[in-house]
Image 1 (cartoon, rainbow, N blue to C red):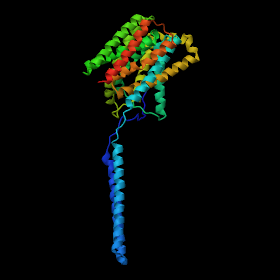
Image 2 (image 1 turned 30 degrees about the vertical axis):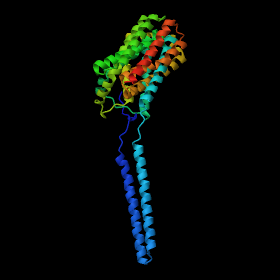
Image 3 (image 1 turned 180 degrees about the vertical axis):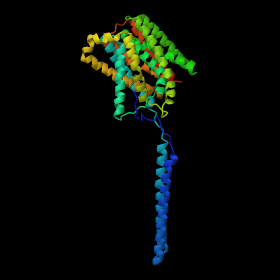
Length: 394
């Protein structure tokens, strides 16, 4: 599928050029002063011709000229000063805050809805759910493009080939997340996701030579303790679910580390030399569809989906469709947030927003808890907060 729509997702800043803004004011000042002088000359000539001039009248005319000159000068200098102050006023960088908030809301909501579909409706086809969600995201982006609301870069085979590696990681991240969420309670998923921060930080150290301060490493050590103690004390421990979650952590870290490199390479494969967020969302979701179809038949989900009774319930499709729309939202907001920050911040905020979702998951799904397991969960959440503070203190 190829599209030829154009979007302006929004610029991250602007280049100030105060000289261009002040120049019109200076020209206006010169014009007004010249006009006042010409008026004075005309008045003086008229007085001279009609022989009405006196010393008093000449002084009055001169005073009027000076007042007009000063008034024009004062007004325009004041106007120039306002322009300079306006242009040099510091711009509030709210991009990271807005993108982070949008990412957190989308992520939390999608986790809850996915858990309802997979556990509440006991739907045992995570790959099929992922396919449906990505199909909805693809259709919405294409429809928005056709309506002129958004635009996407024209797709070509060179661009697709560049994007396929990160797309494969993206698919693995979603599938592993589905299987882990199916078998593990939300609170423990959030604690285990802290491992993603550790893998990401290690990856940044070896790939980008980006070190961390001692507080960050201490916070990550606390995360490891909370994950291990949480697994040991988990009353509903499931080995398969924990294995899928470990795989998910590795793939999520890999995704965040490679996404920025792939975006830079992908820009070189487009005619415009740029690639906006909506185009990236379309690439991720569109390219995942053939892979998902292959996996559905490989794991035998197709036969299950066409025979299971839950697909006959209208409410099931309402929840599944809502999760698909949130899938589009989280795809866009995660890329937006990654643009505004970096891989480590992207991962740590992804864990911080799990504090309210952990509490909601325990209450909504009535998860059995022991005192020691509850302490491990709270300790893990504290480690996440400490990690965020350590990152901000750099």
